[in-house]
Length: 321
Image (cartoon, rainbow, N blue to C red; front, side, top):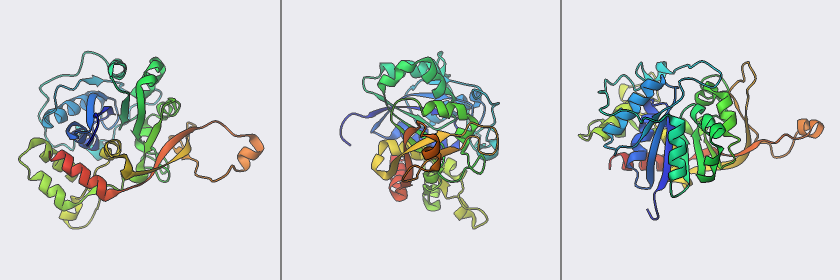
């Protein structure tokens, strides 16, 4: 690793896989985690703050500022994913309450402060609904001058999970996602197409869970809560998906991700396609553009492939530091 660490800020809804992402970001020597901001998503925002502080303590992190953000999306009600992440959002692992509290400033104020104060342009890594980021961009557009890139976990080129076509983070606040795409800075979309593929094998999960080091053991327990195979031998069910943590791996090690610059827009209309990320992979304009004229759409570096073994190895080596 050469050069200075990359200054990063994670905006999250911690969450099992957001917690995996935080553990990685804290321990990777090439990343300088300057702040963490919290938003309603996997669980309510106060639960997200609690979970985030607990994970940072388990990871042995320094006093990284944590900001409480939006309680609900811009237009929609909050809709949690407790059926995936447990009643507490953290797999119901019974983790202790954190010893410290969130920063006195709200998430948007903290984001503005840390972005503008950074001596190098910051990489933002949202792993949650994009409400905080949309509020930041609309309230303090000047921050874009010190944002290197936004690498967000969200969207899908093919199949959704919240609906047949919409991924949860974008579906939870489609208007916020649409605002993100107009940020005017380079954007990478780490969507479900790669998100679902990076899986830690069962044997490695068992090894992490047996560790005496609290952060490493927590990573193993979280991965065991994210089984990727159902209805097979119990050991096979403990193979765990990295999920959101893959987006942070992509910041630390960009060559592990294959992207293509493509037009992307978010479907905002009511109905079955709401929240879909419409990714235009056509090699040439179609009849719509020929007859009605083209519309300006944001170009996004869309993740289409990922080196699974490379990111699994990177993750394990990092969290076991």
